[in-house]
Length: 305
Image (cartoon, rainbow, N blue to C red; front, side, top):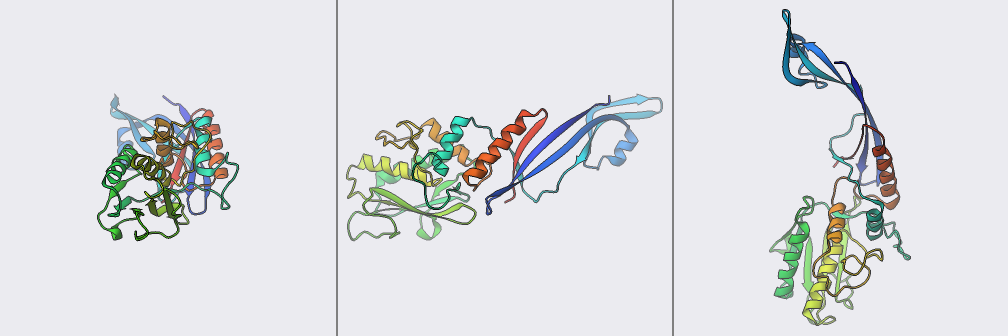
């Protein structure tokens, strides 16, 4: 009954604020053996010994039990949560890298693009200047986007001071602007804030019906901008027009495509490190895929916050 199996665990420890990761290798062997029941009862509180089955073997005056003894050593990790690596094919990752890191864009931002996301609840406050139909459509839209994504939580609040996401319209020159940094020339625009951990924490979404007077078109544009604000996404030429995140304008994009939703869900997945830059993101995927090719290997991302 003696046999052992070597398992190789690669854990990438996610350190968001420094946009770096630390690799931790676990080498662990599991040995099956027969142990006297009396000895097992004395040692059962030891974490590396567990009962392999509920069956007991009686031989002579002694009773035996099958156990598994886990042997090995590893580096001690800080308090956190380990999540299995989420595999995606190269085509998907190229699209994701373009909407998050501007990978295939000719013109890139001056600051190095990083993965940005809402860690806490998104609390929407609608100004009285917002058309009732727009409000209803956007609330329904936000509900559908967050369904099935545990780490993306969107809800409405009734008071401005309770919110971190303000939605308002400029219907005239006398309309109150919640954020002066948003250009009035755009039909829909937003200004968003993030901290040094790449967590988005505040946003203002401005609608200008004076620029786009058709209500249905304004609703579509609002949905597109709202979607991009969930990850500070940019648009890409790698997607066709049926997708919200496509670089070409789709006047019929009243709902996101299945690929748009998959990209959003992946962005909020913890099977990857959060807050990274493109180089770190690609290196981690390369290491993960190399690890998964090895027999008896597992890959996880360890989140410390």
